Image 1 (spheres, rainbow, N blue to C red):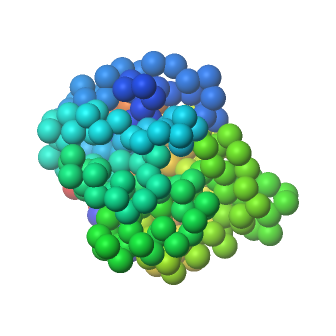
Image 2 (cartoon, rainbow, N blue to C red):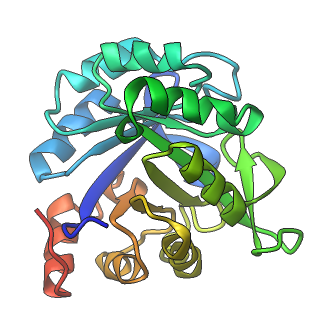
Length: 253
């Protein structure tokens, strides 16, 4: 996997505004996505991830004008997810400035979508977003959820991750719903299990609360670390995270 660890701020967007909650509920306003993306770009972010967290719930497409405006402000890879249901949706997002596209719920409803996107645009464009909860009902102890963590599926998270890699996913965005917004650290067991099965890059998401939380996620196998609220609240900068990673012997840009 990648030698250089990426630090990725995440913009969870609803109705054109960045929002943040705990365990994907009680969302509150965290600012303008274009302004925040520009700020993180200036801080040295390696990528920006833009997730329209209510697009699937509201059964609508991602807000293209916000994506376009964001892409005009940042000159690093921009991953956009939320409401993507077809390869034509991917084409539209790429046309307004996205570099990669995240897919979650639609791939679960129709797994063939993963291969269709990978075949048309290349695996490097497709980030398979996994919103995962711990569940005793799943063989691995982890189950996949949809609709921003609101609905549990019967899919075992590890089995689903292995399947989407075989179908052509170029990257896994592994988000712990249990850890999301809690600031108690990443789910290191989940990251480690994903690393063991994945031959594509793994992005750890959910739970970052301090600079000390990031290095353990990389040591557990993450190729990239993603966070939202600690950046939005001004508790940490991208530079703070990179300095801590370097102090732990981890290579960053």
